[in-house]
Length: 448
Image 1 (cartoon, rainbow, N blue to C red):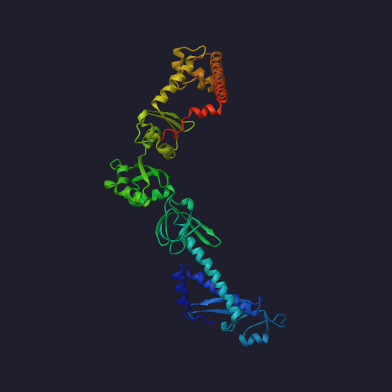
Image 2 (image 1 turned 45 degrees about the vertical axis):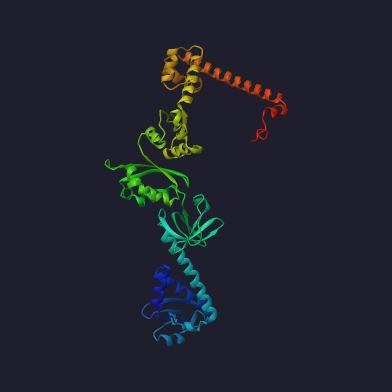
């Protein structure tokens, strides 16, 4: 099977399919070797090699020179060998070039199957190698089809998938639409490399800002963290290594041009740009903006903060359905409990009163406990004897008595709560269904 102008064909296929030339040549050599064994038998010692000068794949059959032939497929006599090489001796291996055009249809079909399979494998490897290094990039593609909610995207070299879970809610695409997404993963599947895209990942937002804000790509401004509720709201925390450059202003751009470009790509997702601060409490206050913060109580051990805000800022700090405080918590990495000043003051007064009601306490002792962070009888009950002794300088026995009194108070309080709950249930069960219905006016009677 003479392959004319093989070099030109190999180079063209290499360019079109993105497969290395040596891989193509190895594939052709293996295919023709397989075809030769199909014709001559599986035991035949066959070798195929590419002759660049001749521009063809040459196939040779090797036989050993012996005195008495026992296997004609692998051996030939000395007499037959000297017709090919007058200087050969017994034990030599002689190669005979085969006419590939005599291989026949079955052998040619076998060669074709090997070539097709090897080409597919080579293409898969080429695509995988091409995209594995592009993880973390934003890529443009064209919507090819929608398969059970998953969007199949044509990237030119291969198809990618944008799973339902990685799509922004309420976003719709039709076949032929251009789409921009972030490469989150590249997998080597049996059917070929699978490029996984996302439009919901926080890194998609970060990479969009990198393309819009030169200061970020130049590492002058750094995005410290980013969180999203895709399609609704996002927060990013930014800092600058140059004191003359405002990181928030750099991300917003002139008249909001830079952030607006990102918002448009995310179909109107609101983006809060927060100045990062090394002090955790100040960072939390920035993250909860525009709400004003009255005070922050930090619990380092549990990575939590109690944030107190003026009553009029409570709804702003919490946000719609708790979104603002939820995103701020994820952004900062701290668990946040937002309270109004009225609720906080009430809780503090109740805690102070519970301390004052403990036997053996006085105002001076309670103030001492209070100023050291133990602000209720419940906290005393959970404290160690050593902590109480260190704070109050009480003897061990008195510190133990104080803790025991606090525990008794808690038990009594729990009992009183249980009793009142039972009484409420009893009262409710005594009322008949008719009396309850009568007490509720029918809206239809009032013309509602």
